[in-house]
Length: 312
Image (tube, rainbow, N blue to C red; front, side, top):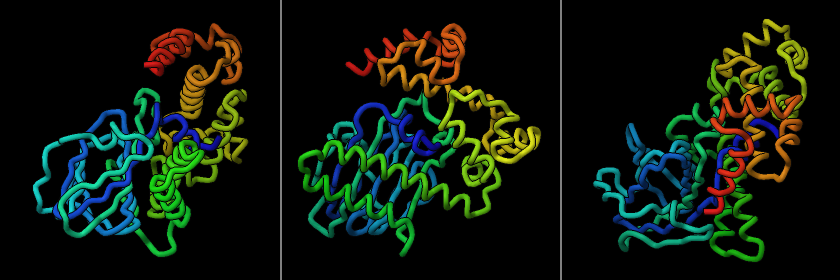
């Protein structure tokens, strides 16, 4: 697994939601804030305005994609001067995978694709915490063709669900999320980002080290071996990694090993000893102590608790 793939795999909990909404002027809608969620909107037809959690309204046109990673409250409307109604319902939280709705008056039509994930904020990757409140990817001829293709496929499946559509839509939502993150990080790396995750992923050495950690967390990495893996001295690598990622290499390695362990405990039947071995701990005892320091409970109790929560 590479870094962005792991971010998407780690971030969500439960079933994603999606809806194709036809809005007719005059219209305006408030999407309530929800801690532990992220959402994105895609304009399929017409135009509208995003009322962000802070700052000026943002004009959206056909093909524009907006990602709100932190669960902030926001609004959509046909007219930024129109007062938005109070929250009446959450069009993300109560929808299934193929919801559709017709809202507003009888005027000009705007069609949006509204999608959302529920997140476990306790296991979110640091990349998500570093993202801005709103990521707007406007339609630009020739840019992000894979993102546009994913949007078209997703809209088609929601409009006309067929056999296997549950799996297809869930996979397309993951794909769309990855393309959004990829497009944003590519854009940020292109505007002279010198620190932070955009710079870290774009940096050949640090990006290579992160990829190595994610692909082989059980390997007996040291600062020196990671530096050698990407062609840097121990001191030079440690300094560059810490400056870009925000924490030392071995601190990030430990965090990633334990995050991977938590995922294995939630999603597999591997024993605690097997999980410990898979993420690079020489003994179940050492793994148990490290896991409890990070998550507040022993691995076995964490597994029982998360299984019980998933069954509710």
